[in-house]
Image (cartoon, rainbow, N blue to C red; front, side, top):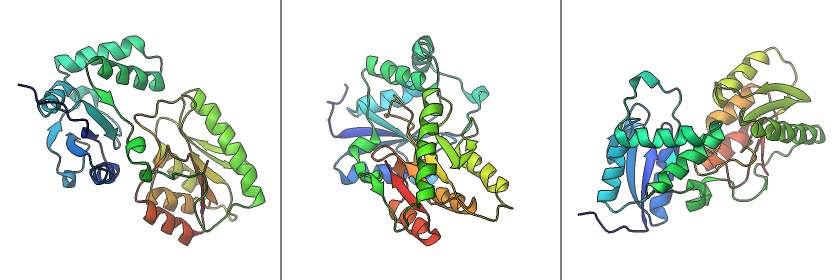
Length: 273
């Protein structure tokens, strides 16, 4: 017999890195009963999930949720590169995949189609940043002791403009601008894009420019929203950039206190818009 659904129960589907940890703890602090589902080959074993699910075996995870009266879920954590040859989907996952492929026309539309497919199967995908807004910069403005210069303000304006342009074309979420665009995120992801910038500017005697990581125009914000962490700050500092631009309320800040401490130490500004 299925358990009665409890509105304060939620499943957290966990990928890699630290975000699943801080999201789990924030949700529990907010009074949620959190059922943690680790994605095999991605989640950190220290997370100690309640169950582990292989990509493509969503049916097992859904059955476990329903047995516990859970119909709400959040997706957090990185997936990185998925080896499609290792995925042998079950019938439930195949039905979802077919529904997604029928309605998607790109990465962003695929996310919308995925959420809609889950909704039609009685599941509600919630946005972690709505349930635990403290995981983001809740107010717009400069978050650090260091402030942008007049020259930085011009780079900020340009970076925002370019971010919106590439975002509207579903290209990427990150860009680096130093008077001109010197890097745009592609399929390699943000970290590797910043690695490219670090290599490019190793012999750069002067510092300057900004890194922007922003949500895309009309992006569905239930899954895969941007995130920054201490590693982001270190990479920006290594690239001799002056600052970081993110969205208020819709960019995860992993270990916020440490991020701000690292930025202030490196004299890098962080601006939320």
